[in-house]
Image 1 (cartoon, helix red, strand yellow):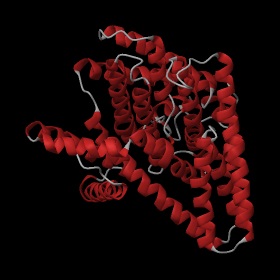
Image 2 (tube, one colour; image 1 turned 180 degrees about the horizontal axis):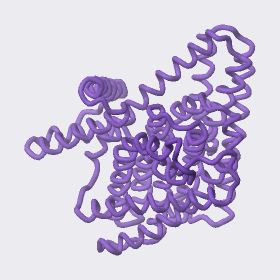
Image 3 (cartoon, helix red, strand yellow; image 1 turned 180 degrees about the vertical axis):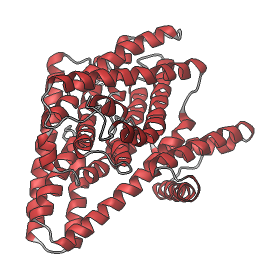
Image 4 (cartoon, rainbow, N blue to C red; image 1 turned 135 degrees about the vertical axis):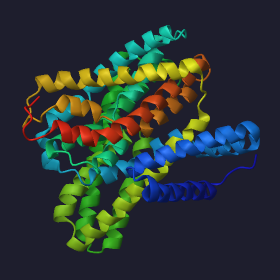
Length: 428
């Protein structure tokens, strides 16, 4: 089949995103990200049905998705821009006030959730008659445990959450995907599919964590500081926007080459520019143009991303027991999230008590494209190392959890929040 060029791919995806946005705005009225994903899933289902009679139609759609390479596109392309755009509007003082809770949830909470989900997934595989090694079940735990900042921030825009709760959810989601990726890479190494196909030891894991997470944070601070100094020296919004664009594009690329956490680097750089840069290095006119530019980048990339998530239905190998495992994984992931949030929240001091905080953090911890991207990356990395049915099942399970998270949790978090946070309601 003829190769699809980059321009053609971009043209198709942006056209679909625009059409779906119009249909959603005109007829459905759902939050944009949710509406786009549902419409893309509907299109995928229609293509599968039509493809049963006209195989060329489904083959063409699958060829398009193979040309996109979802995990590479998201993890090493779109993610840096989306995280930087999200971090720009996070207040650093609010983040610092909740640093203990956010830091613990984004680190120890991820480890707890990974272990709980991994153990339960091993039992689920036994139950559906498809035994799997514990390490592969833990990989599913690692890729599904981090909340997705793209999905979370997209939904938070549409609900009126209290500031303290919003900063916990947003702050955790911005940092925990970087930690989650490190845990995922470490487990992939233990599975014998990473770091030169050599299993890693505990010392290697510690070094990987330090280099990726701490190194990524330091690198993000350094490049953010350099950009901040450059922004102070000019008073031209076109140049200043170009500097921030170069910061994300160049910074994320260098972090990837140096094996540092690009997501964490972009969050730190975004926080620096969004707080000190906006306050001390920009005029009101520049701030207005900068906000408009990055809001547009955020909206466009989000639209394309959620269209891609919906279209990924086409690459799934759907079997009854895979779907059953996915359905069982939904309450498993929610229970693990409740425990991994509840333990830190019950121990750590909190600046202000939010009613039902643990339950709201559990239900508001959405999964999204990052989990799907990691599941696809895992399938490719483990090809030849493990029975393909296991990785196919994990991909389906991931997709089921992500769709439930975005559609069900995303559509209900607003009404639940308004119901649980009534002024006359006692604290949790």
